[in-house]
Image (tube, helix red, strand yellow):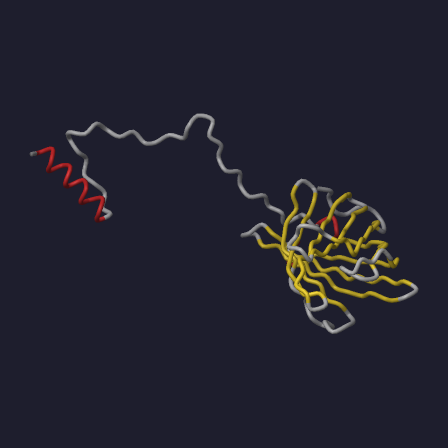
Length: 209
């Protein structure tokens, strides 16, 4: 009878969400211990300084595919400069970008903003020409891992929904490589359409990854 009483009381406490009283007839319950060899989840990496290498002045060489997702093999070459400065103590930065070729001129603005909760960057681009003049584009979102930065979004190109990818690689204090690519098949294949190589003007400022 006592056993039934204690068993019923324990069940009632569980149903009501109340802490059960100690059962004098039950053996003590030891707190559970992690299994041997179990690994604790690694803390999220703080990427606030991932774009520190960009701070300063750069010479830019840009190769831009003449047409996108059209089978084009013709690249147009640009040369120019960019200047990036810190905003909000390094949690953001602002880049002014300007290049020229015999066939055109590109002038743009890039805003990069770090989110300490998600540990990711949002990258916004604004163009000085075209229908999107004065507008910040849909942000590319992503992060750096093992020295490589990958950022993605979904946009419309010529009325067609496409995935867009940014990749930063080969980062040193005085140089960096950037590529933009489009995918029209959900990320199965990618076409690179914008390649930038940059060389620092003056001494190194940022840290390599």
